[in-house]
Length: 175
Image (cartoon, rainbow, N blue to C red):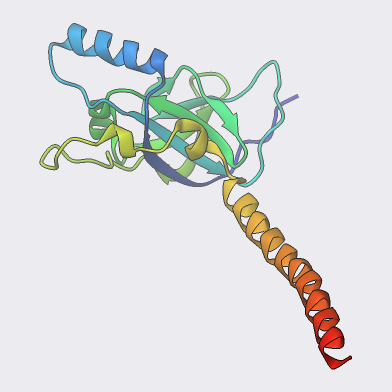
């Protein structure tokens, strides 16, 4: 039984702080290629209309003709990680495609954007980059809104207590 092709809504590339494992891989890649590599992990977030269920025979993801060997799920869709922004530069504007057999491709209608940082710009300040968990968390924004709303509701309750003390003081004064 063939599964339904995932419908891609959009794609974005977000630089994030590399994990310890990513940092080791970046250092190894820089040594192998004998060129400097940006010290960032680029998260390629592919927003899907619905996330397909996990199956034994899933869809292979391609950027142009390059197969992405591993991708993972996050609350809004799927993502993969790029540790060398040269990949993003070489594959920018290449179509995202899915295939079940490596021969027949389903075009998504979405293309990979280029790197977020050009070579002319100064290097990324890794300390200012978000954590990968923050980049992949779709629910972080609503939680913050709920927390603010809860604090606002708590303040009037505290005022009522002080208001009742004020009334008690007034009644004492009037005696």
